[in-house]
Length: 287
Image (cartoon, rainbow, N blue to C red; front, top):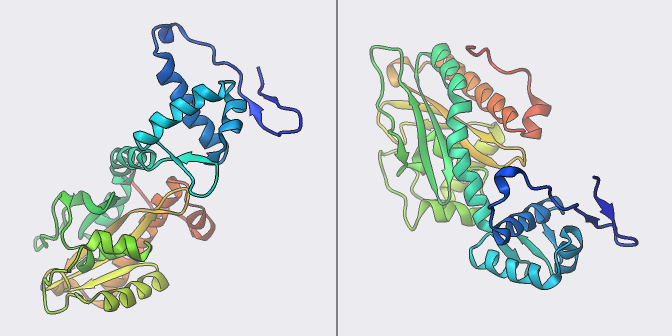
């Protein structure tokens, strides 16, 4: 059965869901609460109480009580100054938690492609709340390699190409939350002044990739590029690292091209419209 439209309102009433055999013992209040969240999403992310009642077929009192609980738990929120209900921050938290599982799986073949083409250590990191977390490391194929990071939360976001590739596209207040009250100095090249970091991140945005020239580790050069989702939001980054002994301009250019191509191709998988528009074709990857 198709949804019907209320006369003069444009709001669609979703038909009652047919319960499968496995749903006979479901809890009605939980089912209705999830139904409300789905309806808010389908309404464009926000809706009035009356609109939600009309769309779901639930009475206003029921909607109000369910929304109050969802707000208390952070899954819904009231829009300040307007009589609207919106999806809450906990929805984004769950989405990012889900992404932590899906991102490494999807990224694996692109990390392998960069690793094979450059021979260097390749990293994958993701933005998780107010932290940047290293999700995967593919070790260099060279006898001489660099130890540039381990799986887990990063403490050098401002000093690494992979961290700067993510920071460059965030609002300033979010950058400050991630960086904390001070930025640690790792080498003589580490930027620890926030205005100076903002200027360096402006260059990252202009170029489309980030460079770390011995800012985190002496004798190590890294190139990183951001990965985006279907909303164009930065969700993570890919980087490659090389010791100075191999860091010719030609090799750095190769790393840059492979990393940016891999980040763009992975962004396309996550539905980023800008990457799809500007893609010149994804890098060759292993089946």
